[in-house]
Image (cartoon, rainbow, N blue to C red; front, side):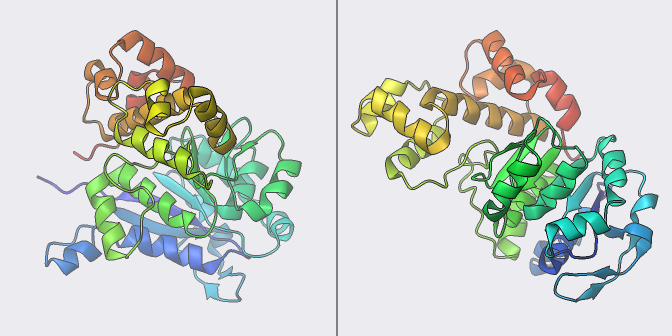
Length: 332
């Protein structure tokens, strides 16, 4: 069987970029399908073809004064599978002003079917280009107030590690970059490859076990251990019948108290959390391409297919079939 053609990844380079994220993204994606194979003496099969693109293919002056060379001119990138926007390491306002010509290229590539992902303050580029209007996003908590003041049309969730709105992904800051990278690697190459990358790069993935997958609309950054216990139970048993009253009994509180504490910690009720976890798992299965629409509802805990379809469309604005057609990344 012929090898899968590598996915095209473009990393945006600009003066004032944080060099560690620029180089880190280059390494993580370039060595996917390489490092693990070398360790086990297997045939190397790179999963991504990665290029750094800058305006005019100019050298990139990073925020720490390191000079990096670009592989190509962003203007010559007609299409790609994934466009990455690294962290702004210098003054955000200065960088956006000096690199305003990049916004047109972001809009152009966003009009294709490419996934677009930003890390930390890189989300300011997406917002400035209007690509986050009406969408959920995240950025570093230290920039949250600035972001909200300048882009009130964006639904900023700064307490989330990773967000997804359609084909646009955002990561908060710091270690969230690794969560985002592993999520995207899994999106294209599957969980096994993503796990291999995490092991070879010694990344402590926050996604946990097979059932405790990354949920890009839900977070656990709070300190309420009772709520975390219920969250983890839901994530491990989402395909089983779940009642809020039973969950409350499990942690020895009333349903009213459980609802109140969930609202305070994760801005949703337990029943909404259950639905969100199930929808996220359904999205994962659809993206893998290894599920039929007919069996999907049952696999994520719904016996009523029409009810599940309505919930799924409300959450994603797509039917399950439309979502699978648009985002399936099954490697053939």
